[in-house]
Length: 135
Image (cartoon, rainbow, N blue to C red; front, side):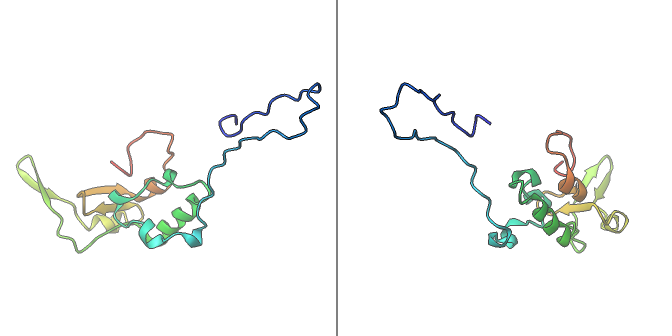
């Protein structure tokens, strides 16, 4: 609490000649923009690798941000020609049929050629440093 408020000097009963009140410096965190003032088309990124973590938003906006992402759903580009990677003696690539099998949580980033967990992104505890949505 002391990080945000500055303590007042104790009251001095002997100092009656000074009738002016002391100035108190109070620091407030700026109020976040109201949800209707935010340009959601710019703020909500479809590509999972370009998203801000939910914890990066002001606490009063986090639930609204989650709901916006839930309305859009996970990023599942089905028509993309997924690049292949040589693993051992075989070429491997992301299989878009996995979107049907894991439709509620699996998403894919075209810019990083990686799979992500949509539910992990939305509800991951920011205090835990586990890998998940951004791996």
